Amino acid sequence: MPPKVDLQKCDGCKALDEPLCEQVCPGNLMTLNKDGKAYCRDLRHCWDCMSCTKVCPVGAIETRIPYQIGYHKAKLIPMMGTNSITWTCEDINGNVSRYRYKNRVED
Amino acid sequence: MATALLMDGDRCSGAMGFGVRDGKFYVFKAKATIVATGGACGLYKSYTSDSTASHHQTWMCPFNVGTGYAIGLRKGAEFTSMEQRWVAARTKDYCGPVDTVSVGFNAKMINGKGEYFLEKHYADQGGDKAPRYIRANAPMEEWREGRGPTYIDTTIMDDETCHNMLTDYLNERPSFVLYLASNGINPAEQPVEVYGSDPYIVGGHTGSGYWVDMERMTTIPGLFAAGETAGGNPNKFVGGCAAEGKLSARGALKFIEDKGDVNLDSGQVEGEKERVFSPLFKGEDYDGLIPEEVKERLQRLMDEYAGGTSQFYRVNEQQLDYALRHIQFLKKQIEYLQAGSLHELMHAHEVMDRIEVAEIVCNHLKGRKETRWAGWQTRSDYPERDEENFNCFVESRRNLETNEIEVFTRPYERIVDEE
Image 1 (cartoon, helix red, strand yellow):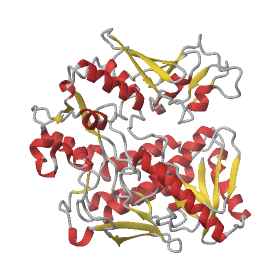
Image 2: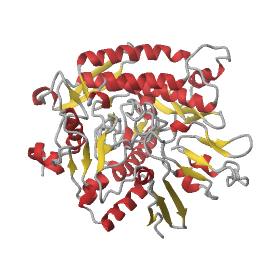
Image 3: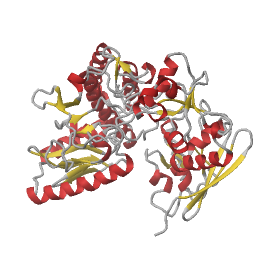
Image 4: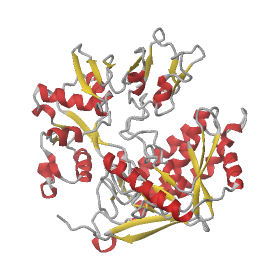
């Protein structure tokens, strides 16, 4: 918390009426600024659910822990597969771990 | 966002609301209506809310604001067990799930002195397998007794088990893994801290919600409830809530077959449209209130006077009277709410709904003059269980003629034999 948007990577999901992060945010928090880049309209209202981070097709959104709760700067990056997510986590001491699980069951 | 039920006499005839992005007013005329909005988070202040950039550090979804309850409360529906608040032992500072570890991986809670306190102090109630309200309240009692901090002892795990546990967390609450990484915590080497959550009203876990019949119809004909809004059937969780969706849909279909069509009252539609959008049209110079400050006033009030985390969930009659007195102030001041955008208009209605639900929660807490589920419901002025008078449901409804909230009881009937 909050989502940190990489303005170089974000293309505002140009082809869509509504960008994916705006569609998926359960708090109606993500939207586009006047330059067509995603931003969170009220940072302290973010629930850290990471829905925007996972859905962003260009990997422009990173979820950050507020400093009052966690130290600078760990990372948790999802790589979305067709039916699985691979997560890469780096802690404040530089230790890197990888995790993978299936998030869709094939019919 | 739904804002009100439509009524055709005593029967529910649909719902109204507005689009939080398109700003349109929506009218749903319906022969039967099912409320499945989820419960209420944010009635109480989260302890991580102060001095952090983390206002929504709650276990329950903070965007569930109690709308499903509020729309029925305003129409006089009967509610049950709203005093049975859901409070849980959660990971400290992050409000992540703990049962994932304790139940899924057999890890036990431990206090600052290194004691397995559930075993030590709650053996007669099942120790580490004690009922959930005991497991929720126990760590907070350790803190109160001067034996904090409290942890869940994850160091029993080998690296592979710990990796599997973290994978489970990534599926359930991914940013908790980021929280651990941000604090340099490897759970296989260091226990994870636990603390009590802020209280929630969530009928999927506890018994709070609309009083419903077997078909899940509320006391308002044509209005059904499923999941967190349907009261009196706790511990149903995700699967049970989904099953209840099916039950209520069957009930609604049968009701439609029996009762037929409804009439749409355009007076109600016009009145609600005006009420819903009024905070948007107060004008730039209007000296009013923003939804956020009203919400924070309510959350602090509930935390301190209605048994929040700061009070170790304890409450007495005088605190509740204080809370209710101030809830009346808040209800009167709703008229000063102003909104500069559709998003803020949503917040304005969210806080109105939260105030409505908070009022009924306080009335229920007053109604149960005993302590039945310490933590979920702790009366410091009635610390014992009173089987003679309170082995029953506490109920309430707003009398629409007097506008008073009436609190009463319903008998508890055992319909399945105890194992």
